[in-house]
Image 1 (spheres, one colour):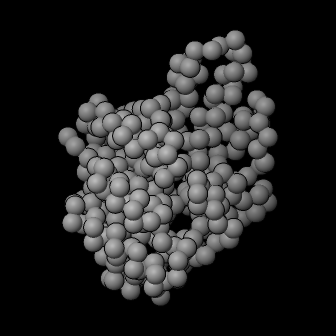
Image 2 (image 1 turned 90 degrees about the vertical axis):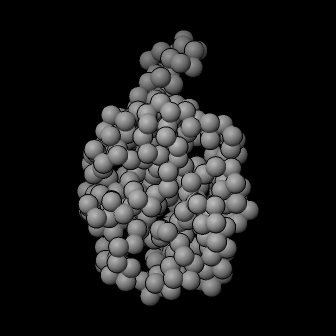
Length: 309
């Protein structure tokens, strides 16, 4: 089995009311934890790589890790570029074996966003690769993406954007946020289902993507702080809201921060309890298990895609 695109995955997810998890990967343990969870749940899977991850781990290493995961699990896996900043980065990933790329032109004016997205789409489709575009911007920080305030997606723009660019899926901003520092305690995080419903009405059957969809599990933040961390209390979008979105037009939900929190909390706890350990396997093994358990939680509680591979 080789890499697949998300086309058939999204069609089935839309028709049956679930979403595919898109999990960011940076190293071997993260890839293994995610794919082991998906294998046990028999769930389809998107492994995505940010520009920062490509700088950290190198393109060739990430490609080989994902190829190994496919050989090991025989799962349908999409390899996706997350937040491609420009045509050159997207082209490099297309030429380098990715089956899906995102071109994030959301920082540009509407017409310029259309132009750069269309250019990527034309090149990608000529090479059998699918493309995700974005309208609206999420607040928060993820690698080089740093936005101070939400810019909600304008439903009046979505049909023109999709028709003129030819994108295969569309990331929208309806209240999710990048990073772990999302909402302070006492705030009331909400998804703008009114915007989502209007976009779905204007783009019937078209796959929608939610970025920044970690829920910042409170017990993980508490564990990090218990073992020497200094993370401020924060909360994300409740998992039941994300599950509701997944039953409609949302076919892809991006999850990264909750994986990082699970891994970090586990490593810090290990060193607090076993300060003499120095073998990386002794702390990265439990961290990999924590990643696996978090992905299983998301597949069951948020995505609803168990048994859909």
